[in-house]
Image 1 (tube, rainbow, N blue to C red):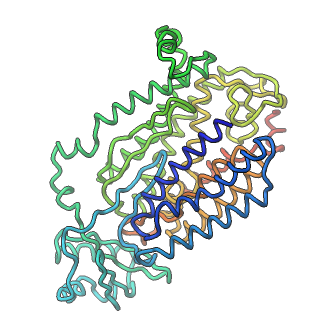
Image 2 (image 1 turned 45 degrees about the vertical axis):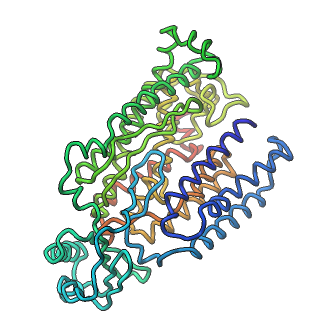
Image 3 (image 1 turned 180 degrees about the vertical axis):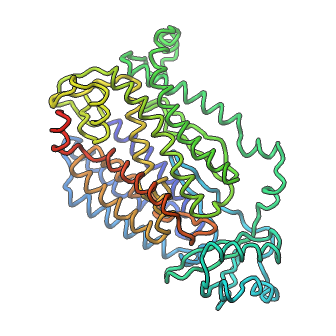
Length: 506
């Protein structure tokens, strides 16, 4: 019971921060009201638990209707207070993520937007054979040029970008988006970061990356994950507030070393995941912070890691590469760690306590990929009546699979949301994200372990910030990699079919 209410408290805090950073800049509706609407289903469940106890589950209809009403009311309030129409949203919006990159909002312009007297110069930047401008809209923070595209999107963006820079210098960022009518349009946004991008000193770079903060969070997370790892290894620690007793136990090097396999395994997976994002962002010359870990002294020992990108993503190709690099890099490290950990895990009998998230009696058939890797590591030891008592490294590897799957969910500002956005465009990605959320919610009624995950994704905004060139499509090779990433998500979250279980003899 206490754990449930602690989770609701953390979920409420995370939801408030998500709403504040995601939509506060684009709607006049109070943040506290949007937060209250989003939290209504969770608060309703908490009230039910207080009244009837944790053993009596609420009616499914109550959960479904509360989620439906909350979603509709949130969308209505959001649109009611929206500052500008959706297809004229010109500047990148901030993200709220656990273990994926974010983009900071562009500040209020400190340079003047284009004046009507400069319209002729602006129109000259759009050759009629490339993009025929039919209408120019002037807004406080943007100039929107609508018309007809007459050549390939990539060629049009590059040529018009060159013309804009030749005519106006670095005054503007040029954004190329697809409107609700499927017609592409250009947006000129004042470039307030031009001086920083062209004149970045070493001191400014250190201020951006903040290596001191990154190292401090890294050390703190190593401590918290080691504490959790010690308990996973079977050592009972005193409560944190009993500092003397806790210090006495931890002064034993043997106890500390028992926590390191889990701590180092999990932090390696999370760190490599974020380094994948970071190095790919650096390849595309995008200003970004170093990976920051989030330490907590309970649960898993960390809430993950993240980086922040401080300049816009140039195109969908860069968006795809940066987004997929993290999950792929993390997965490449996860697999060997998980196989080694499974090989050193104990095989136990399936009991009533066997659950997806019970490391002492884990049924590997809850996941297709986990079952295959378990059979590969344990061979004939694994049978149809076997469960796993996971080695601490296997626990870290299993959490690595969960992190990979969570980030690959094709919803909003998760890595998977960025991937489908880059593959299919922003409008289609919103539809895919909504379908994915509903499918996961339906799966949660069959597999209750997914309920918390489904609720978190349900509250996550579907809108993803556009790349500067958000019209040019990906090449076939990247589309294939994107489909493989979605296939990886499926084999992680779906249970092992009986036909494959018979083939593997488990």
